[in-house]
Amino acid sequence: MKGSRATALCVLYSTGQMTEWPDRWDSNGRYVYFGDQREPGQDVLDTPRRGNRLLAEVDSWLKQGIPGRRRVPPFLLFVKVGRGRDVRFEGLLAPASDIHWLTVDRRQTRHGEILNFRATMSRLSVQSVTRQWLNELQIGNPSGTHAPTAWTDWIDAGNGRDDHGANR
Image (cartoon, rainbow, N blue to C red):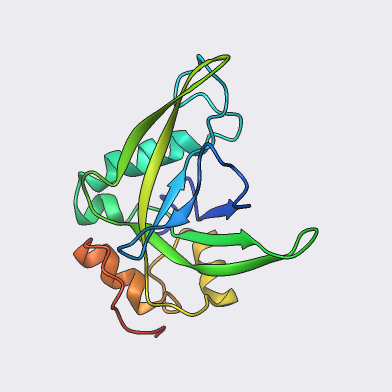
């Protein structure tokens, strides 16, 4: 559905250095990503970059089935490696399921309680994404001719499985 997406894609960046919110691969091969709330006493949605608000929107879209999944932006995961700005592409992610993929975690600090999202994501079977698909995403066409088959399969099935085929 061209032009109907507010967020074309979401880049997840993890330094691996947030001990309170440790983004990581779990024992099932799914990625556990913590949202961007770091301030005690704030609403879980009230974050400077609005990342938690996007996660909440994705959660509501997933409850709508295929039409809602069409609105979900692809999540590109990058992790910090080495020094400076060095990063590694870890994969194309999608919510692990249509329900219970997003929960609220609580952490007590000496300054008060922090509420943050925990998002469980599946890595789709994609080694890389093409510039052509990124261009299609930018114009609001996430299922264009350059979209990875794993992504379009996820939109159609929504199961978050990571055994889909390679790029088209």
